[in-house]
Image (cartoon, rainbow, N blue to C red):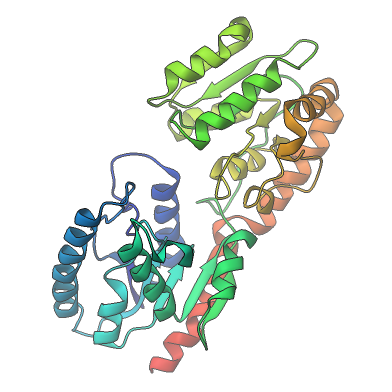
Length: 359
């Protein structure tokens, strides 16, 4: 069976802290593993959130040690392909290109981004490494139209760019939610930055709602006190569920009437796929990345403000038939385009020629 080396410089799939990056890395290993043996060849996490030149230098040094180790251990010829997930200027692939050059392996990237504007400034060294790694890729899989803009602009000759739609780690869907009764549901980590900004928009929207409503919030994190303060004016109508495991989250989707998450700076948002797979109508703002995974419909622009979100919610909350129609259509879209079978076909259709050329 084909043997594939897998590496995620942003966050390895074995990392103990849950996140979308970790889950996506695990899902990719499942997709690739449908037709190959997948080896996580390194757990070196190089992510630099702060732009620290000394840290970048240390990681480059540690990467050279990994290059020497892997060049030796993979030299037996069993590995046929290298796949790197999420190469970008804060977490470049410092290992894969060098190992692939040394061993003559095809090199593939998934969900990479280019940022030549970062070639000066505190991430300059990392940005240069990320650009060089992208240049070395035979194939780059992009997940959203937003990612395509820069990788298309800066692509090198003979490099293939392939659309891999975001997907759920499943080949089938669970039973759909009822959508006739139940609360609204929001799901998001509670941390400063974009997540907290989404919670602020939710709070502003709740203040403009009419009629009877209830909201459940699944998630936890260091900004929970701030989120609780935002929701305090609506305390009787808002329930905090805390951080849920997969089974608990599935139950929350199943009892919900609709899913509401504005999506500030989301790359695309796995929660949108999960909610739609459960047959829930979804309300988000019309944002790059997010719009790639949503059923086409009435998603207000960020500029329209919370009043526009509240108008859509008021309509959905008062019309169970509309909720049912939207939820059913969204669920069908997920079944057709965003499960592991579709992702497996896309991946192997693109990389199989690379393997054929090595024979």
